[in-house]
Image 1 (cartoon, rainbow, N blue to C red):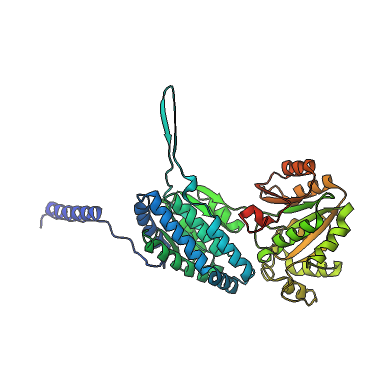
Image 2 (cartoon, one colour; image 1 turned 120 degrees about the horizontal axis):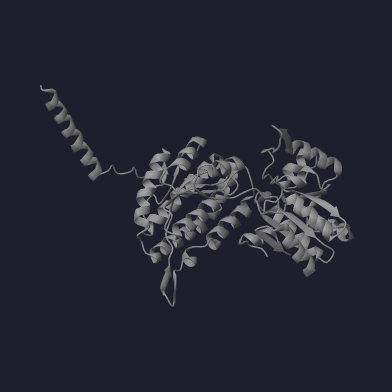
Length: 433
């Protein structure tokens, strides 16, 4: 056969194949549960679903979001028990509260109102448009609250989301994904508008972050994941580290301060990044504050016990301080047992006096032991608080009735959240004031 004829035939065949594939692209793999074996399939399915979702009316989005809130309320206890069992962190009763709070307090479409204004030179209309599909990372500490919180906010704006959940919480996350996916479809939303990979790994994170059609990353996780997100060259919304300090001055109501510090620091065994991590108390009221902490059920450790706990919790690795996962999010009696103290399970918080440079003060440790540091006056307390917060600009608390001190603390600490005379949870749409 003539070589030119062969070439012509091949060219014609390839042309037909190309035109067919262009006219009818392969339909993405779909999943009724939103759970995929391959990250690439999850991404493709959510990209396709988002095209439908972006065309839906605002009231339709609101219907879907309402269904998601109901699903969280209906399964709050089951999610809590599964999360505690799988991750080994936190308390069931506190996780139930977190789940209900995520359902109630997560903002939806209410902030997405278009607006217009006119002037001498014409009319301007400002409206909102979705990014598309967002790459999302969830943590092991709060797997389902973050999953729902991200889902509601992203869907409200017309986006889709592909999740790489924390491997230590993949079972409860998959269970929640299935329930949330059903709620979305049953209320009129498209299947796979949210999705996840069944077996999350660093490799699946890499695929997710590098996908060219995902313009934004929302990462709630450890420093390695957050660092990887910022290296992807995309818009990033990420949760950074925190080490929230508390200042108690001589004008504070000690009963209220102690109770709310315990409420915040003990909540879900201190695994919230906004939780009270170290307390600076003015010398004049220090002894009374310590007694009041005990009156409200917190149990003090002596110097030897604090030293023993420090040795078990902290280690030095590659020039950095590491915190043992064995104690993160565990109940207070587990920590107490590690230093030879037998306590009942209903004890929610341990505390003890340390110096300002102690590891428990300087490192974010996420467990129900609270270091207390005596300071000369409010000014020293402010300075110590700023140093312990390390410029993370995260969260801080102050208990005072002196407006000048409160103002000075707020200006010096310069964190995103400052809670005055309340528990840390009040700064998170929390259940307590």
